[in-house]
Length: 203
Image (cartoon, rainbow, N blue to C red; front, side):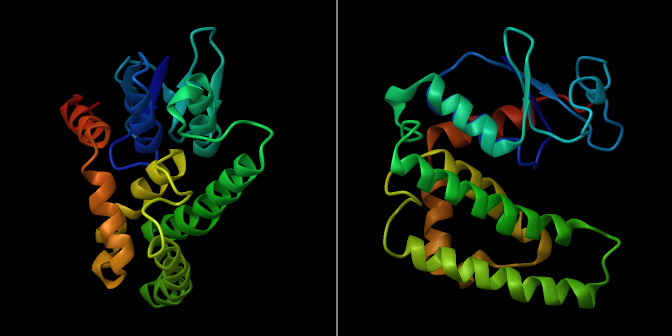
C-alpha cells in the first residue's frame, strides 16, 4: 500500500493507524500547493480531488476520504480492535463519531485555515466551533477515548485538534481535551508517524 500524505494534514490519522496495526506501507509526500509528489508525478493523477489522504492498494484501487480509509485499515486487522466489527451497533456508533469529527471539527478547522475569510467572520466561526469542543470535552471527561478504547476515531480527532495552535486556540481551555492530546501523543505509533513525516524530504 501507498499512503499519500502532506505534513500537518488529515493524512496523519491513517498514517498513525497504519503504524498501530503494523501494516507494511510506503509513504509518498505531496506538496499541497504544487500537487507534485515525491514520486515525481502529479498527485491529481492519483486523486483528482486534489487533497490528501489517498491510499493506493496493492491491486491499484485508490481509496480517499479519511473516515473511509480509517475503517478500511481497521478491518484489515480486526484483532487489533481499532474499530468494532461491521454490522454491529458499536460500528454504527463509530460511524456516528467519525461523521461528527469530519463534519464539525475537521470542517470547522478548514474554514479557519482560509485566508479569504475575514477575521471578524472567523470569530463567529470560532464561537460555534468552541461549542463542539465543549461537547467533546464533556465526553472525554468521562472516558479516556471516544468509544471507550483507543481506536481510529481517536487518531482522527488527535490529528484535527493538533491544528488548534495555528488558530491561536489554547487546548488547555478544555481540560479533558488537553489530557486526551497528551495521552494520544504519547503513543509510540503517533511519535513514529510524526518523526517519519518530518524526515520525508520536501517535494
